[in-house]
Image (cartoon, rainbow, N blue to C red; front, top):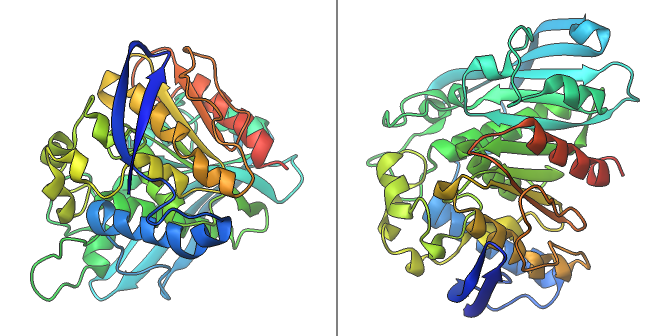
Length: 381
């Protein structure tokens, strides 16, 4: 079912643009939260699996194991305990592993809530020695606010190149008898799978409250965090930073990066079926407001940057705004507005948060300040 929506925002006040979006409540539309949980949500999630992200061949493997390979209870000048955990797994294609970095505040009452960053940049951005520090992951600030700070490198789950899925989690679990099916998981789904395995570890660490973990990522990492939060309802908060096309931005607007362009530039990110919609966004059975709605009733935060036209900030805002009907089924507020805020004027009054930061495509200390503020409202209840 398609619904015609008049979209008018402060970002584009000169005209009304009518876009037909799939009904966020599903087909037929869910009338109650019970209908959404039983039918609407599973059907919506399946559409994203089949047509966009693909389906993982396995959830939590029986072979999953955790090993603390480094520990320092005096990290950050005594403010935190550093742990580097090797998360390993094996399957039909062999064995693999990735490293999870955690800093847990020493003075906070345990167990503590925390943030998991899916890092799509180099190790220097999440340097556990803290000799190199970057606003991309301000671990000291996160710890000072009473949260566990954690991160892993996405490339350790699946290399960010079109390498025929012959490495990491794909090499271990991809066992297709002939050619790769159109709905087989791809790189972003493998990164999201890794986020869930990190959450599996948190459930074993008595210093961490695994029921209060926010997952976030920037750009392609933001697409990943949304897919991780949609698939794994154990994540208490999902954050998308400048995720753009096939992240938070509405595909049907056809602004910024388009589906055909992203599938050409990064053919390994999404499942094969997604390429059927190159230059045919209006025929997609879903759009990104539905991906955001899959977080309900859990809180979700979407952020844009004013100089990031490639990610379509207006489309990101509108997707967040149009997720609200699902939150209403649970008696919760979403953004509660259809007017895009001015730069640096965050909206954090409901279960859907949003801000438009002044500046370019990046993850900055300003963004983190908003995510920590939102966490104070939802993770520290």
